[in-house]
Image 1 (cartoon, one colour):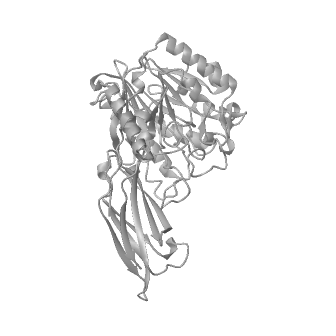
Image 2: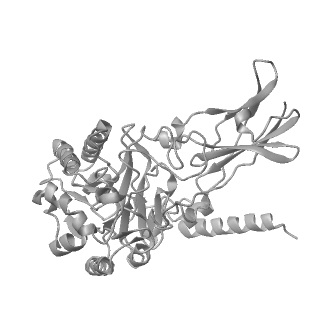
Image 3: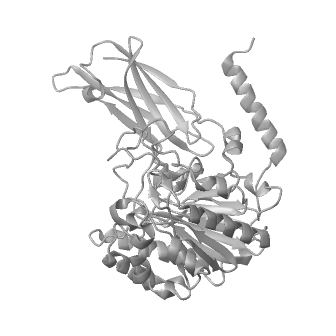
Length: 480
């Protein structure tokens, strides 16, 4: 008789073997012709311009300059456009959108390099989309002026629904804005509009990607899209605030769709920042600051933000080659570098093969768990020479991608008396090789629910990767 764990392991192995056989054991994905790039678009979200925080303007300028420089390395005519998936500014104010515009025009000419946006919740009053969303967002159009809408093909939908249909370099860009916040919903007219536009565009040109931008994430797709709902850790006071359940069903009818969303600020370093199912979805992180899941990690400034959240600025450089293949360079503006390897997809095909490379099912099945090597415990004494706690030092784990976080648990007499979750520093480094080689974590009296009793304590260390695969634990004992 096999145990349940053995059966589970065997099933995973069978799935992985089948996927490898289907995709090829040396699966390398699509080929991108870097010598013949026909379109380069910068894609960002959550710029959050705020006159009281000068760094917001500086980060916006830095992102634009780095987009322009990077695009020019492979695209003969340089950057062709910039897409902003909402939250251009921190709150609705004409002075802020004027500053957003000033910074953009200090780097790029909107007549030559169009800026296409969708409306974020920070761009409207009370940080909430409502039935008055279209009217609430009129000031953005007025402040930016006609030169920012020259690529729009559907003026009526743009002004009446905040649904935009633009074309840049033969590629269609659709934007759609919610009119309800919790849950995030879109007007029936907007849903009908985007479905109709996608049907029209893909019927005429089924082998070309279509770009869709909207501020909220699409539920149960990329990293963060379950925040506050099904992640089982933190329940938001505003259910349905972070992701929409309305668009995925429509978009799944069109495998040519590639979507970009914001709102969450989750780092692009994580492999889950791209998802493929019936279509392709990507996160945009944030130009201004980082957030992540409410995982109960140490060193947090709030439930979803780290203390070093401002040491961060990211976005995507989206490119297409002459054959219609797509490449995404995840840009780390803060470190002026590209994150990891490019994300590359072949042009859309009727077989749907272009949706295989970054499917969560495939990558989870092929994933290998992290491993740990060493852990050392050091007794820490109080000034009166009585045991007051201890420190745990360990070498960083290894993984086929990187370790996402560590769990340290302390047991006494068979009962867990203290735990600490340590988020790895993957979000601070464009490449995993730059991550810190070791960690030291202190367990002082404040780490325990009551007085630290004398006796033996068991410390267990486990590493987890982004797919929740866990290492074999390392266990040590210490006597206090």
